Length: 427
Ligand code: AMP
Ligand code: GLY
Image (cartoon, rainbow, N blue to C red):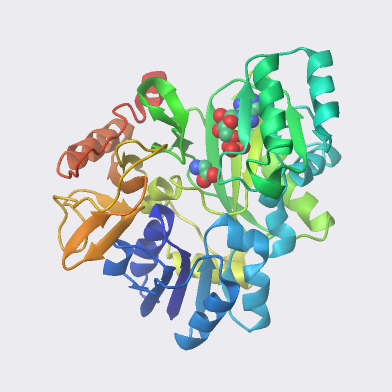
């Protein structure tokens, strides 16, 4: 089969490498891809991941038998619908279903209507009303979320009235997230460990993947600014078997059924961002796609051919596939450019990688790299996702840090405590 992957970060590299393991994959293509991906797939770099026409043209040109749409924006824009109209098999939800991530107002109303546990909330389309509500409620911290997509940055946790008022104004009046901020959700602040659970689903059957944990802050000890993710571990020790059972009954199945009842059957990977609160697991967010960098620790542990799973979902037959997992753990450490998540330079030579962009003992997923004349150069804020597996979390974490030491580029930085807190809680 010819497989076309849409996207160009570490998540897509992990997908490409997993697809590469399949006997069924003949040729793999990626739009736009990146330097690391180009060693495993043919990259069509002139086309953006959001260019629906361009992706359809490419799918025709390469006679794609399966198109995997990985990022949120093309899914929310309806790329899958357009590919299906042209007769291509796809992996990813259609536009009607991708709204579960595309609109926080939609997802909150869905959860309220179908009694799915989540933080209490109110929706506002007027900044004045929102600010009045915050003043009246007078409870901090309070959580303010832009309705639409905002590159993962649309959530502000305000510690006092001034911060909350500033957040409302910058989202609704200054439009720092554009039209995504026409409406906002103000919600109750929840506490507890966070767990990411990615699930394969065809809308009838739901098969959760191994749980994981992201580390969103830039610096050790969960300090510094929010980022797209500085590292991940899988499995997540806070996600016990008991909690997994509860999530299946109170969250996963009800969500799939709710989407069916709304006429928005979800097919693909549905990501549940959960918080294990003192009152039980609650949904923090839904994503309509594989998480990044969660995918980088989840897919190395998958022991079933990913093409079989993706095609079964496309054909509404996920119930016929036995999705197996390795009894191991994985850890991913993100190596970022100096200055990320604010200002950083690119074009630095990356030392220590072999000709495939790898080091021995790890999977090096490239998030932002370029391949030029035999060299890998930095090309983004998050550059490499160094992922190792091991018999247990400690082994996986130690091994990924051992491999991080083999790689260097000017001004690189990484967190030194990925998985440390989870490990401590597990002992
Ligand atoms: P999101 O972009 O929705 O994943 O939110 C970013 C981060 O904000 C989450 O990973 C949580 O750490 C935090 N967060 C979001 N909603 C809440 C909430 N209701 N209570 C506490 N923390 C939250
Ligand atoms: N790691 C969080 C996300 O993919 O949105």
